[in-house]
Image 1 (tube, rainbow, N blue to C red):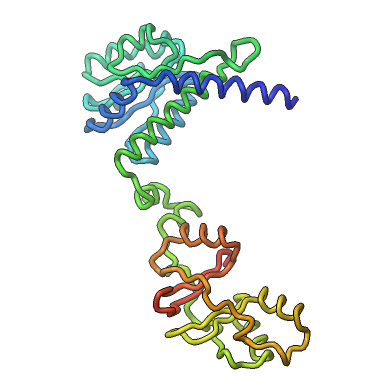
Image 2: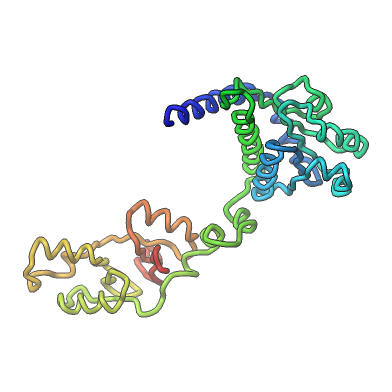
Amino acid sequence: MKEIAKRVFDIEIESLKYVAASLDNDFTGTVEAILESKGKLIVAGVGKSGLIGRKIAATLASTGTPSFFLHPGEAFHGDLGMVESNDIVILISYSGETDEVLKIIPFLKWNNNKIISITGNPNSTIAKNSDHHLNVCITREACPLELAPTSSTTATLVMGDALAMALMETRQFQHEDFARFHPGGSLGRKLVVKVKDLMRRDNLPFIDKNASFTELLLRMSEGKLGLVIVGHPGLIEGVVTDGDLRRALVRNPDTSQLHIHEMMTAHPIIVDPEEYISQAENLMIEKKIATILVGSADKRTIAGVYQIYNG
């Protein structure tokens, strides 16, 4: 079974490389036409091409290009009313001869819509009736019978992704823009929420560096953060984590000989309160820490503490 899977991967990768090598100025022309457009970007296709078209439209819409999917069959029975003259229409058909897609071309011409086609045949009827053609001609389908669309649908999907990313980068679409379109769930939270919005501010476990080992244990337990902060909000000298504590006990079980200034990390990581949660959490994952201080690293002042797993 693994051999079959590997063969499919190899065939589809081969086809993607072939399509990538075939990219021409029509791709640049397509991007420029969409950027200049004052209307929406409408994607149309049927069958497997329609399914891919829905995903392309969704990706475009979420990355700054107003877009929606239009089923050619429904379009021919009234939904063409949703198409305005300043809209650009992407027609997807690997053969370039899909009947349902061909039927809406006369209306699009009459309506003065710019047409972009994604096909595997530059000489097809749909391609020839387009203002710009994106060629997704593949070397072969991964289907052993050469019947089920496999490599061709993958190539079409990647072409759509390439188009969306080119538009996104040209428009300088940023984290904040993405967050506006994805306000729900953890993705939206990480992109729009800042560390200051979720950090813990109250009852932070500060301790003096000359405190006893018993005081250290009690303060760490009370703080429920897995660490104590050595110093005060206006000037911190370091932190002692529960890991530091365990390592110190392994080295010397005699607690009377354990001193805070010897156990502490003198230069802990401090993130700015204005930093986005996504940036802070990426840093925490990189450094393999679950809790991070929030404040000014330069002034060594603390405004709060953020935990990556805070429920």
